[in-house]
Image (cartoon, rainbow over all chains, first blue to last red; front, side, top):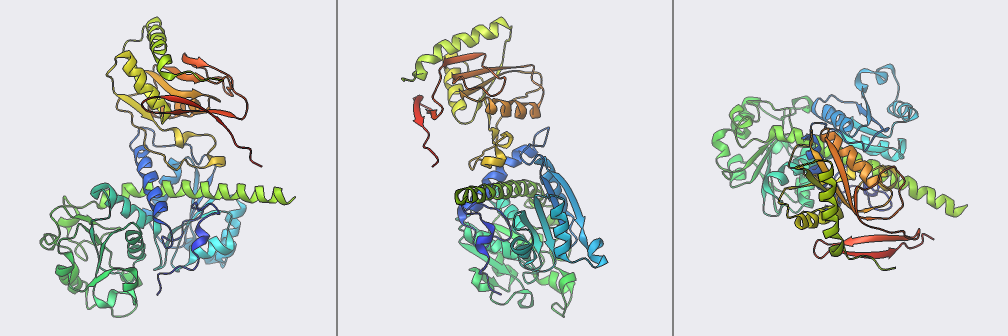
Length: 337
Length: 170
């Protein structure tokens, strides 16, 4: 595994604006900050009586989910609706592909229906990249999670959560705990924290749940939860992804909880005002104790609220970057004629 | 062409607004400035009126009709309306009225918060370039510019107006 992303410029238009949102890799700090600032403004829209602005009126957002999801799908739907876009959601796992249609054909058909934005979730790493590069380069492609690779909107909503509760990143110690190996959220979070200037990123997991080459992300690895949690400002818990585990990576869930579960007792090792985060869905008693998940330091439900604002920001920014690129291409053709 | 000094326009704007509100028997209106120039003008106007009311701030970036051409304004910030809109008399304040599209966007945004009893429009300058049937109730000065000219307001203190000439695209 290498954290270097060869397809970096694909996400940006000729003016450096976002046109697809595939991965946080290679995106400059200014752009991540712009996403967070824009999301902050959309958060205010979510608090109004009429939670809708007309930015994407007349545009069609197509959620194409090749993999199950509740939170990501519904918050993307709400985000698009609050931008006044028309939204359709396709659970492809239950439709045409089961009749033998290829990914390529499914997407080209949706493109023919004049969709403007695709939000794609797929079990294979790199699926969103593939679509942005080869299938629909003129649509804004948003990665809603691809395999173990990336979940960039989750990464950004976690950053928004941290920034809103802690003010910034420059002085923070952040621990990411649990099943790092299968977690695209962990990868997106490590990249975002690094780019935004977090000086102390800790990764806490049993050796069997760590990917090879994890140090390349500029993180410190701990295999002891107590040592890793000491004086941290933020604890990001990850779900144990049993469904992705193929071999005997763990003796048992009970053993994992005993060693790596976040209990009230263990949380005391972190700073007294440390935040507890989790991308959901949470497995109570597997990676986190109920008293912690529902406790005063938990911001797990705030994350969901912030997720809508972040997705509104990314949808509108990518649409705007894609429009600008179309304008640029048009100007260039006119010059040549 | 010489541009007026905003500081000299404000006292007569304050007087005209008071007159306008009195004529309509509006007692306690809410004041709202459109970011960024309109907020500066609104602050100066409230000062000229000796009014201590909190000022609402509107950022119309999410409501602009040129999003598909110009995209999202990179420095969009939340609107801040520290009062109810429903049933209130509003005084909406902007710096320069040109096409009227900003005001259209502002009205749309305000109506997403509620149904105001009335909206009075105050502008420092009216450039006689309306593209929509929107005109100010109170205006500091009216002037006409050449097609390639724009006016820029600097502030918040002192408020100054500056004439700019658009560079040609080719």
